[in-house]
Image (cartoon, rainbow, N blue to C red):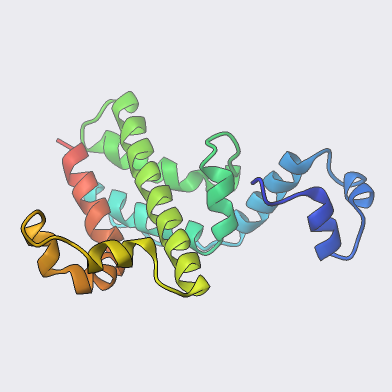
Length: 184
């Protein structure tokens, strides 16, 4: 959220910051309007009836929706701003958790754990993508190139492949493991 200023936004849309303030109170209101507009355009998938599978499918849909709008991650991870239109995702996850036997409080906890995993995964991928686009060797590449095989025998066997291995999309596997661990 820090990179977006009203001046920068105004410049990008060919306006002035003062002109924007005729339409919105502040940056927060503008972000909420943008989030609501984005959420309104996201199709809601059909979800399976079985609660565990419903939680996984809703989490996957939430991940896909937020991944499609990378700026939203920075806004939403602050945990204060949210789009009412996007509450469909937590509703589906919390409902499925309650249907499988969690209390409403435990179900909200389960959703929050899934949400934080989702935001972290998307944020981590975005940061890695930016680093790759910058080019040049990364600190991680230097560390793994010089890894001591005696101190790190397992990691040294995959050192040359570490970047490829850690770039694989494991979100579905991870969220399934979370759901299975969170539910009775």
